[in-house]
Image 1 (cartoon, rainbow, N blue to C red):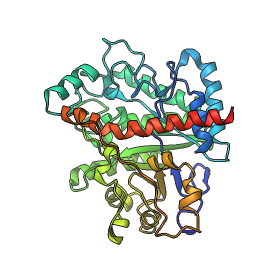
Image 2: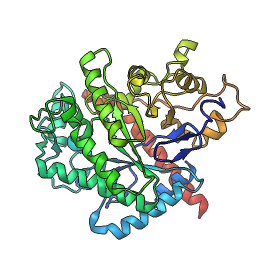
Image 3: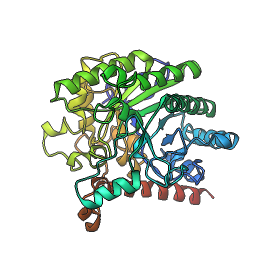
Length: 406
């Protein structure tokens, strides 16, 4: 354990991590109506988000978002937010995102008649049933294809959000290019049918991501960390894997300090439901392969050996974490839902040498959606019951923390 999970890691930007455990970003849904972080955020992060770069387009109504018209207030609250996160001398990275076509009506400040934006005018496919088709059309609609001005605006929004994060005291940002959000929509051929400089080949589909990384690097202070979150692909498809590796090499060359591997989107909800792997592993073989996206990490590792890989999702035991790192599948372990149930688990369980490997298991609770939601046939609603339950636990934990300190 001392040679793997507890070992420090120094990133290329100079930021040093105390060990290999990372509190992964989750949907907290706790921001106020203006997209500002609240005291509940501070209460939660005293013990242990996903920030939208454009408040018109949000993934959830309670997402923290950049509000340029209230920059002074935003910066003040972000400074308090960052200070809370850093209270234990912990490096803190802000995940920044644009949902693109996955912004539901009413989540952001855009008018009800305004369309979402996306690389191509391709609507979400939420399922084959009548209810699913109605929900897709009514809640998300068909997005409009972005023009050059839209693309330039999004790049600048990522830059401005990163600059504010740096000024507020965050050590860096993680660019969210997974889970079917806007940058994933550009990277993926299924959602990017463009024939201009931003589509047609894996290299062109990655252009907006490269532009964002370069622009953030140019605007951010020296030593500022820039990471990225990417979707895994079906490694059984040689073409898809080759295209993904091409894009990944371009992204690394542009200058990211780490890559987090995840997967799924609103049409294919791997990142929500975890491929059915929420039960405790039953054998030594399974223990060594308990992470959701381990096979993809292994498939790309030899192609990009120089960048630290972070693997999030599915880790439920210390043994599983150690096995993944000893096999050189990843360098960092992302903890999400178990950290909600036990915020102190790095010290109390994983790094606690008094607890044996046999007993070093992470808490987890599986939530099933009500039968009516399951009957609807809308996958993202059925699978969304579990993250919604965990978001509620985050909120309640923050409120309890505030109450106990008052």
